[in-house]
Length: 489
Image (cartoon, rainbow, N blue to C red):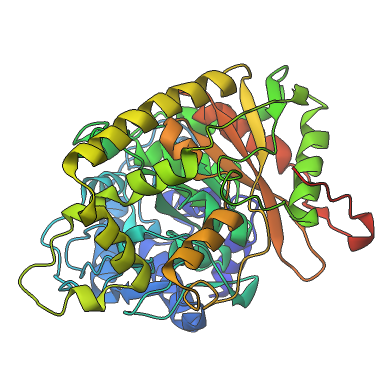
């Protein structure tokens, strides 16, 4: 395993591993074996629900055979003109919400059978075409509903920075795997913060692309069954902006790697109009102040950005109906959940899922459609307000990650409230359909990370990752409690 120490400590570990495989310095099998071993060594983190070692090693052997038969030179292996796919032989893993052929899909639920998938989800297919190898399925909350990754089928996903704390959700297992160095990066998905929450909790870069940017996200359209904007999109979790760009390009099938090229030239980006806001759409229902650490991270980002860009205060006003409206739209799909003929299935649902499903079933189709229409209008208003700037800078998470079990020890309503208080700025971006990136900015004395969120205009994913590269060009700021400059919203 010593061969991988330098790769893992590289500033861009995914890029380093990709190049090492393409140039023949590391075989796909060796890379896959190393990832599997690291997963076994860190079972304490609850990152994985399933490891598919035999299948992964067979794929790695095939990748190495392809490498041996390919014709390319070392110079081209590090440039644009490769005869092998961009992630050839790179081990990754997928959330246990999507199908990966040959692996069971649990969706994080004990209420449904865990059927072995016969075919890949379209997003998984795209990464397979990009050359990636899946080593398993990562831990998620039931149906990806919550901002923490705990369920009844596997151990909770724990934060590598402090395993007593949650890794976030719904991409908590994937974030734990990346933050712990099990994987160099991971594909994830985000329906209300599910990439950005675990990225911020674990000190990673997390990109939520705009709706439709990754083609496989909208194969069934841009709206849900009730006419609301589709909330869920796919995106990368990584330890650097360049790695996030590489994986983002692979996820959308851009073999020219244009996002990565943009991030490589991030230092040339200047003169953006950046608005800073600490308003949240949940404050009418859950008026929770940001912690001193969260505001210190925001201040650190502000200071770094103002050396290159025009940074000003942004007065953003959210519709006070948002908390109730988002909750109705976010849970409407539970009314369509088919539990089959099993009379005990509903009782095996997690308490929050069961409670919110009952409420969704009690609302009529007409009510669901009206909520969809209202949130569509609200999204247009938010886009207009944010559109006064090129980018809007917001705090990340409002407080430290809660302990494992903290959410489940509460009633469903109090569980949900704590999620909204912890991550008050993420779901509104899904409603808007715009892209956003989570960026780590600050380390606390006890090793936790605090970051910020940047929201851009449609099509600004490359710009957001360039800003993330600028923000992380220096090491994270150090938070000192004596510097507490906490201010309420």
